[in-house]
Amino acid sequence: MTVHAVLGVDTSNYTASLAAVDALTGEVLSDARELVQLGNGKKGLRQSDALFFHTSNLPHVLSKLISGLPRTDVEWEGVGVSVRPRPFSTSYMPVFKAGEMLAYTFASMERVPLVRTSHQEGHVAAALHSLEVAPDETFLAIHLSGGTSDVLLATPTRFGYAISMLGEGADLHAGQFVDRVGVHLGLPFPAGPSLEQLAAEAEEDSSFRLPSRSIGSRLSFSGSCSAAIRALDSGVPAANVALAVFAAIANAVVKAVQAATNEHPNLNTLIVAGGVASNQWIRNRVTRRLQTLRPTMNVMFAPPEFARDNAIGVASIARRFVLDAKTW
Image 1 (spheres, rainbow, N blue to C red):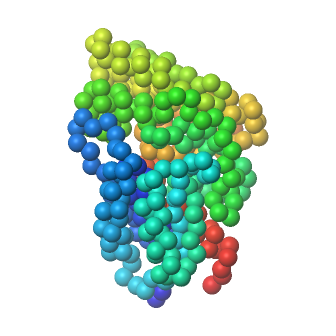
Image 2: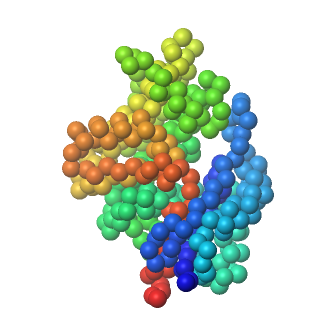
Image 3: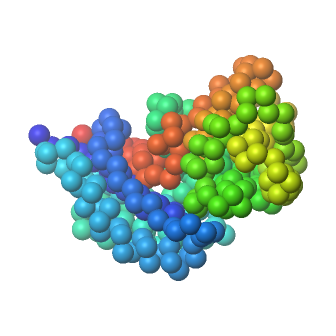
């Protein structure tokens, strides 16, 4: 039996990701990822180091992907790859070149179409894939990560999504906010998982809060971060501050959604994607508050494995292109 498959490739700053999906059904056939390992005290990764990491590790990740495929004949029908952070011509990061080179080589060898898309579109597509939702009209999307705090209008297209920016991060991004507080506490970088574990230890009666702010649909976290670090230095329990960090992000997201829906009242679907969106505290608080404030809005978060950096969304975008161009 032959399986028709589409390959997805994504090389973000901290994760090399490959995925194969069934070209006919969209089922994930294999998913392989390799996360950059940073020692304690590290606050980030230079682009040159990240590019070297991906170039060195992609052959290993590809081997893991191939070994995870069904033990049947695989016929490749297309390749998708993220070539930039956002779907704009001015958006560029060198790390994506590593994935693009692999994708171009693979597509050339298999003589199949190569679909170039963006990391941001991949996150949105991964969320929709996991939720088994396929909106054919414009919807609201929020992308929360270490380098992005964007509020978007997204419309499906043949090549991914037509993205209109409603609100770009005003200063510090959500992931940077989490990481700076985590690093101040001596947690490993990236700090999201460790800070989430710490938040679970917060006192049930803790009244500590951090300010949350959005300028229209633009998310702002620099003031919240400064307040969190001052609180830690003044002796507020670390767990209480950790929980307040996630509450501040969630509150800012809710404010941005309200601003966006005031401007576009016909929007009734919200997709929240990106690594920060995998946090349980943020997910629960945003969902609960919007159920009260915007009861007609369908609020959807991808499961954590689809919210974090992955190539499943990129593969599903390429699959949509392949299905549009070919029938079996």
